[in-house]
Amino acid sequence: MRATLIGRFLLLAIVWLAVLLPLWYWAAKWFAAPPIWLAGTVMKSLFSWVDGFAQEGVNAVLHTLVQVRMQGPQGAALGELAPEVSYPTYGYGLVLLWAMLLASRTERWWLKGLIGSLLLIPVQAWGICFQWLRDVVILSGPSGAAYLQYPRWVNDVVAYGYQFGFLMLTPVAPIMLWLMFNKRFVAALWLEAALDEVPEQRVQASTVDSRKS
Image (tube, rainbow, N blue to C red):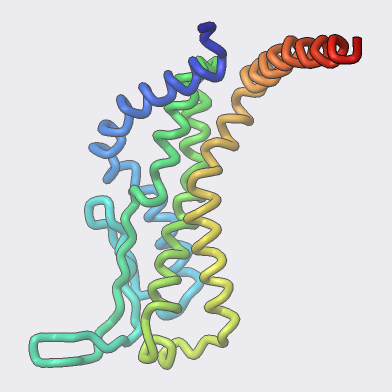
């Protein structure tokens, strides 16, 4: 069976993912630093209840002044909320982009990979910010809501931003960047698909003609 262009690309992309994923996970704490810094800086500049942020390995920790009820050794007590976000949840698009660039043998793949990696930092920061906001605004319970005193529609905005970052931005952004960097390769895929449809249309047309005759 003839190996199609898309078939070779998918096979190579899987191989490169298998090679790059362990390396990316090993270096995740360094890749996590820029988006965590960006997310923390944005949160601290926008919300007065943010006390600071920190990176603990691959986790982004937001230190807040929001008082929530927590269970302690001596019963329930009020404490300051400090939600954590795992960077790999939003950072896997980086390795996906590099795997697709290598699989498609993109011209100057290393330069486009570096540019794409920089462009993905705001995408990753978006996911981190909105998961922090979800944990603080929506999941903090009645005590958190009483401290923040936000209107109900803020919960809907935060929920939408979180779902958009988790379900759309994180997986789709690297694919869109790859398409932008590989217009010639994508055109070749479309051409191959169009050429493959021609024999099928001819067979269908000949079958219809034979039935009419």
